[in-house]
Length: 311
Image (cartoon, rainbow, N blue to C red; front, side, top):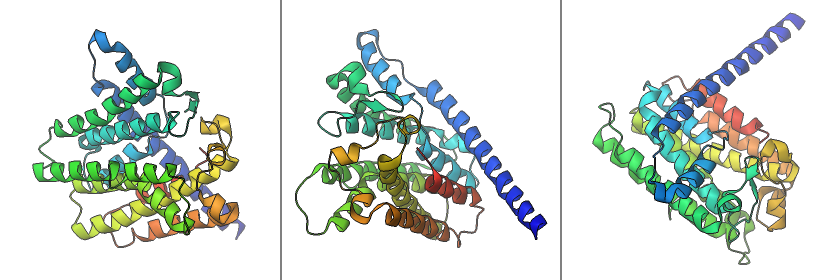
């Protein structure tokens, strides 16, 4: 029995090491393309280019682009083909962080271990850098050329990204988040906020990867469920880490939610119940993959990464 347990532990450890190596390889692939594809702006607006670079290349987990690359690869597509789409989503995510940190929003002074963009460049340039990243993301997609992606699928992707990052997704979630109007159903409001503010963009990554790889429509639906659940899991973990996380590991100042009196899972459910809810979303996420015919083990591993992350 001891031998069996040790073998099982070794298998888990090897799988974990394999996944870390896989994630690292996808990061290297993504970072190289991100740098190579970044635009050079006229010298008259060098400060805008510097501001965009400052936040875009500040590091981070790059979870969203890795989700696109992994989903596409699980569907049999060369991840190189998905790179412009992965970059576009990271542009949008970075824009949202710049704007989220502004004094009129969460008023944070630290992001990814560095002063936030508006601290470094001023509020006006930070605002415009976010605008520039958002709009350029759609140029990245619309100018991507590959015979492996049909124009129909590219239009679907543009529509999904506009929906999930705009008024039907992230923007509405942010508005609901800063709206301090009293509610008689805080749980419903919290679910609305996180389904839109965080979950929508994460879900779009899974959908984009699935469309690029031409998954069957039924499987796209299952992958959408997966994206929704890991998006929820991610946000619950984010709320938990804001209360108990370490500043050095997080790369930002914890306790922001409490200071801003933000509606969070721990505030409504407490820390222990929030941890159970995160695990429940993880379980639902991986269960949604059971009826997919292709090998989606890497997505299962990514779901585990989301659940267990400490920053």
